[in-house]
Image (cartoon, rainbow, N blue to C red; front, side, top):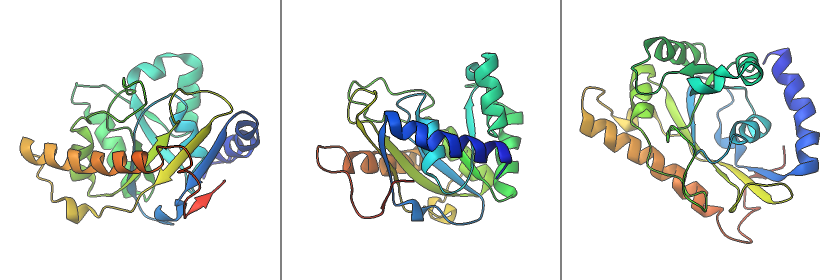
Length: 214
């Protein structure tokens, strides 16, 4: 973990706790070591912050290229280890970077939906097949995760960040040349994410086994 990443987390946790009532759940589902893909639903620009603050290990996010056009946000994401991808353009450089992150034993962070959900309650949408392509290319295991803001994103509201059980890459059995296969695997991953989101979805459902305030 870089010094910059440590500083951001050290300063960000107490600041975030003053504004948001967030809780991390089942953080033990993230392996202590080894390369993997962390897949999460996408509701807000704050999703990355809450994953960074609750995940035990650094996450290197693949994010849409447009975010890096902003000088301040681009500088921040790059210093946190993030990198851009050109959506719908077959970005070879981004794929090579993703494989590099996994091969060196780090966590690659991806939002499979490709954009923030348009659903008013924050429900996850259908994912793009890119996540299945990356899983096939890297051979990495997948850990699903879900951020639930329980409605409209805002301060002084409960926010749950839940990490699901690891999906071994071998269990996905994805053929990157088969559209049907890519669609199936993408659906499987997204269904896990949605189940986690739903599990923490209603009033009083937070604070289940595996809760951790870090």
